[in-house]
Image 1 (tube, rainbow, N blue to C red):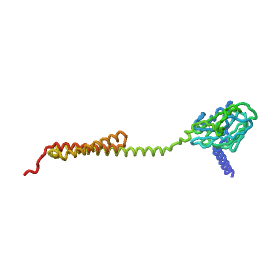
Image 2 (image 1 turned 60 degrees about the vertical axis):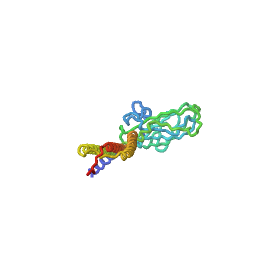
Image 3 (image 1 turned 180 degrees about the vertical axis):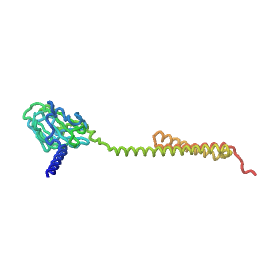
Image 4 (image 1 turned 90 degrees about the horizontal axis):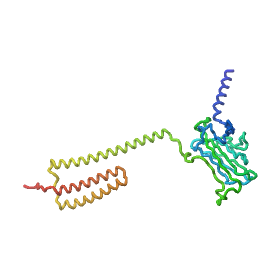
Length: 319
């Protein structure tokens, strides 16, 4: 019985140890970072290598350009990161006014005039009541920490810090458009929010697809180029054997050769212009190869017409 109780106790202790990092700190971030340094000033130095990161976009919306005494404003604190979708914040006005927590936020125990999250998130609505008299500009500090949810502060967690000022009453130009009287202030790189980490398997699949496409394109290029060279070589060889062993080309009467030569000449000129256009306009290699071969075929036709017209007339029907 005692052994079973010890085993049960051990399981409970292990469960608490494993669950603790998941629960994190339910009381929000600490106010004092140690050594007289405040987190609101230094940032979350135990996360993200100890330096702020532009990958985290920290913003506050509903901020007036200048406050009115005793007026209450509603601020929305937002925290954005490409992959870390939860985190916390510290928000402080240096005690010049009154910050009122909303859902998911709370007053900081060590500094009741500051606010922090009471539960992890990325969007909090809080209120700020301006001082009852003109005490000069109100300076605000906001630290936002986007964590990866593994319960351990490390380089995968990212944070950023935002400072801004609300001018005292009457110290700013009145906006002509009332819609821009309240503004959104942010810090961070918005483009980084849309850079997702690529899957290594997808990268490898894309690379293999590129290699296959390259082999296909090169294979076609080599095949059709080689075939074209073989055809040209066969025509040259045919001309050689005709002259060497066949007695030369057959005579073509000039009454037939002249119109045939004109037709073939016009066709050759048109195809030559088309070939030059395909090369100059950067057409695919297949189009260039086809037009080039057709141009050579037409030029060869003109050549054959001239050769046959100049060939001696041989009478083969003599008795």
